[in-house]
Every structure is written in structure tokens, then in C-alpha cells.
Image (cartoon, rainbow, N blue to C red):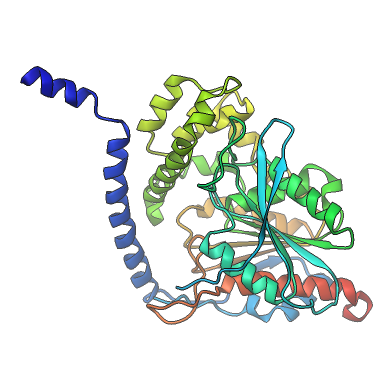
Length: 400
């Protein structure tokens, strides 16, 4: 009887601990959410800290975007469901990129054809709440929206090659932008990136000057700029950063395991059985990046992966107007990383860096304490800034 019990114990699926961990993580996340909301009630508020050079464009933008200079007051949701068309783009390596295209629900204030090309956060896609809310608001302001679905992020789309999205791979985003330019030859582009998507968007623009053609401006929200420098802070406990890292690692683990047949079973895969075993025991993003993610593009080490896929080495090449937004209480982006955008804004005329006291990571909710509005301060600022840029380009002599 003892031998039979021992055999049963040995054959328990490795997925079982993950199921129990998921229940515990859900409970912890709920408690953490309530605590953070409660703490915000006792925190002071202030207008965002703006860093930029004194130029005619920046003066015009700050005047035409008053929300950017007013204090953001956090509270303490039903989200809209915009209708779009899903597009499939074959990639040279056999992968299939997907993005969702949403047509404007009115005429833009300038009368021009303008498209928001949007890159979501880590493991996210067009069906996420914050993306749907932003797209719905942008459509109503006369913008067409194209939202990249990170490779492997959509649960109902199978991978067609042994590769997923990574921290700084711009291939799929570039393919989406190329499709928009070919399909709508008269359109101009507003580039928007959230979190990891901000890194990809800025890296894409800085990789090649040609990528900035037809681009009116770029907005990056809550990105960390340098994964190599961020690595030093991932396991610190302030702002509950270590817990968030654990939660994000658990989500990444689920995404990878949902595609294990493609990632580990194809003949062209770089993965080994040992990599799958190490994935089951990973408790941080760094472990997953080192054992899995860096191998998709053949990086020799975790340091090499973080170094080459971070936008910090490309962002200074961006010459179009660039708005960089961060929050002081972001649990994922350490304060030490914010010297990168602040220094950039002090040196380059086209950059505005805005830092709020509150907002968390892609939060920036407004409204009642227990019932925040679906539309966030973040959504309003991005569209307001984009509108300001569009009006400036349309009526530049008068604006100056």
C-alpha cells in the first residue's frame, strides 16, 4: 500500500502546484489592491512634475493640454467593447503576427486621416480592459486605432513558429505599421506604447530613422527604459515590487505553457526538456527570461538579452515629439530608472517627461472611491497631447 501511495505521489502532474499557487496569488492580489487603494486616500496630491526644454512647441503643448499640468487625484468597471477587425500577417520566420484594426467613429478635429498604432504591455492584447477603454475614447476623437496582439498573448490564437513576443523585439510592431502605411497611404501616425509596449515603440522608432516617417509623435506610458538596470530592483520589497514580479512571472509561465507544443515540440525550436523543467520552478521574470525568453533570439546571456532589447540605447535617436509618462508609486518601475527620461528631456527639445505622484502601473483611475470611471487620466492625457500635436502640425504658423 505504501509503495502504491509513493508511486501516486511521484506521478502528480507538475501543473498541480501552479493551480494552488494561482488561488493564493488571486487572494494576495485582491488584498493588495484594497490596501493600495486605501493608502492613496491618505497620500498628498500634486500636479505632475514636468521636465522639458522651453521651446515654442512645448509651450504650445502645455497650454493646449491643461490636464497635463493639473494634479491627478486617484480614487480610493465596466469597460467599453469597441468592434474591430483582426488582421493576420505572416512573418519571415514562419510566425503569424496579429493586430486588431478599429475605424474612427467620427472626423478628426483637423479633418486629417490619423492612425494610432498601439503596443500593449507584457503579455497583453487588444481585448484587455485598459486597451479597450483607450481605443474607444480615441475612436470617438476621430482616430483610427491599430492594436498589436503580442505574439502568443491571445489565448485562442496558436503559434505557427517556436517563438513568442519578447521584451524588445520590434518585428511584429514593424509589420503592423507597415501594413497601415500601405493600406492607408494618406494616414499619419501617432505611436503609443504601454509599459513593455513603450519600450518596443521607442526602440522601433530609434532603430532606423526611416521608421519615423509619417509619425507625428510618440507617447510612452509606464515603461522602465532599461531592463538591465531594472533587474537590480526586481527583487526589492519596496512598493511590493517583488510580489508584483512574482505575479507577472506566474502569468508569463501560464502563457508559455499554453503554447508548449509549439515552443518545445517543433523541430526548429531552441528549447530543451530541461528548459521546461526549469520553467515550472521559476518564481521571477528574470528566471523565465534567462531560461526561455532570451533563447527565442539566440542571446548568449540574460545580460546580453536585457542590454540589446532595451530602448535606452535607441531612444535618443527619436526626433519626433516624444511624451514620456511615469508614476512615482509605480510598483514595477523603480525611481532610479526615471533618471533616464528626465535626463533625456533636459537634453532634447522634442521630449517632455511627466511624473505623477500617483497612478500606479497603468492605473491613473479617476472617479468615486469604490467605483472608478472606465476612462482614466492616462487616456485623456494621451489623446489631449495627440490632439495638440495634430493641431500644431496643421496650423504651425499660427501656433508659433
